[in-house]
Image 1 (cartoon, one colour):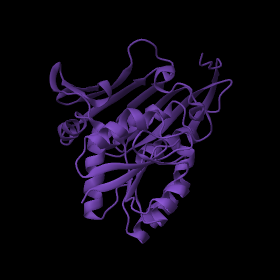
Image 2 (cartoon, helix red, strand yellow; image 1 turned 60 degrees about the vertical axis):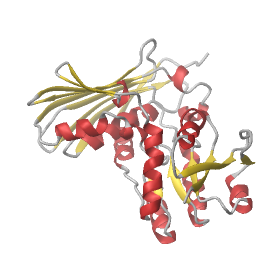
Image 3 (tube, rainbow, N blue to C red; image 1 turned 90 degrees about the horizontal axis):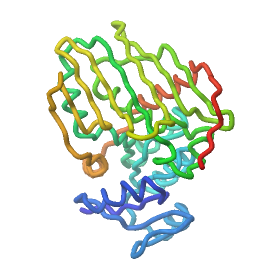
Length: 308
């Protein structure tokens, strides 16, 4: 069976990642687009999800790629209409709005998948396996990129619920919550807010775990030139480094993994598997850490952010 899928929200991430991943994944095909601003040639187009659900009953699943502030209501409507749902990260604008969706998916017998794409980077599972029986001494995360490059003209990211720098930062948290063998928790948070924005442009975070392992994370949306997506872990067997967002793994200078990322194809393979198995996959731990960062966050005002 081939899953007939609709994309809801045809923005930059959908065009750059979802469309080519769907085209390259067996078991799923693009059947429709729901977006008020238009679609793509030769694919059925609807202005809204409600219109799609009413007029395209043969759709099996939807991938919701809108800004996070809108995802909960759209996912609920799709699940209640009997559709499987893939949620772009983050799965919602708040933590509490996800529990009703999980319950609805269970009640309707549909699959709900919170797709943390960075977990599917090629070095993540090898890193998880390496760390499983190691003593971890410290962890340092640097996740710094240029918002003007990756989110041009996307005003929603600076609004409440848009996460600001945590939009990329949550990618690092999704990797950490996958590879570290023990749960960890936030101990300190400093958030830098541009004077003209409602979301932070940088974050300096400290975490620990039950044995006191120091974990430090620095997120910044103001990076220019080369971008930085690195996680460095000191262990009893030397240093392990995930770089390039999880596509490269280095142990004490020796390259263990160096592969081109194919995260979104892996996401859609996983979605197909989940639907076939009749199960859901919704891990909220990365979003919980972001919520904690806002709860503990000491606000620091910085210069206004002007995009142009």
